[in-house]
Length: 369
Ligand code: BGC
Image: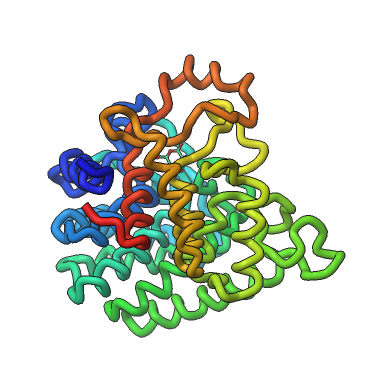
């Protein structure tokens, strides 16, 4: 069976009857949970290969989960409007159990990017198949009220780290999600106006603080996106701000410079690190980031480079075709690997997000089941 066919089959088999996609069926720290971030890209992958029903079910699940919390969202928004600062612990969670409840395990639970990414993926899926997923309106509208009220707050990033910072990849996801939600045509006039205002606010903030000036004053970040506002580091998650989120598209100098710098600093032989200071499982190369880098190459017309990343992803599959989260050769911090093996066991395998990214990049390159 091809890796495209295996990925589709695996994702379909593991999708919960609720519609949720588990992040990884067996990995100790992820088992039983679905992330909006992972799930949105998994749904995008299967949507591109014709699993319309699977993607529909995931989007309906997300809409239900957030829609059920519309009261909580409106209470949070009202408190913020009265000038209260709402504790991070009271915000919506990062991940939900497959049945859509918050779950009892502690997690790094305030992340905004997944909510934006979900809206982006819902719109991409709806536009691709020319139909609105039934029953999503309440969830979409609650998500928009949540994001327009809180987009400016620091929160944990894609890697569940640095809650004290404002992460550019998170801002890019919210920017894309709010534009997508507006395009779905289900918002009230007030929600649509708030979305437009937040989109402009994000663009302005990133332009001022999320990019190094394109002069000597820009230092190491000159002319490209920063990992978080004010940081000089790059991060693999920034790739998404170019393709697919389009905060700075591939044909904009900032978009092009960001992809080039991520590749220069973080790519090695087809694999891509999250960031240079990464120590999680020793800081290996992540398959899903190879997917994003390949996707960026494909979107910019560099098919041969894109193909190299797809081939590297495929070469990391286990004998049964499963894709891990990261691989243990060429570690950035080899001395830190064992502590994670002791804490959480072997690296998450299969990671459904890795398979979702493989499907996306395969589709970009015309590789089908
Ligand atoms: C990663 C997240 C991911 C989660 C589930 C974490 O280790 O940092 O980006 O969403 O795993 O796959």
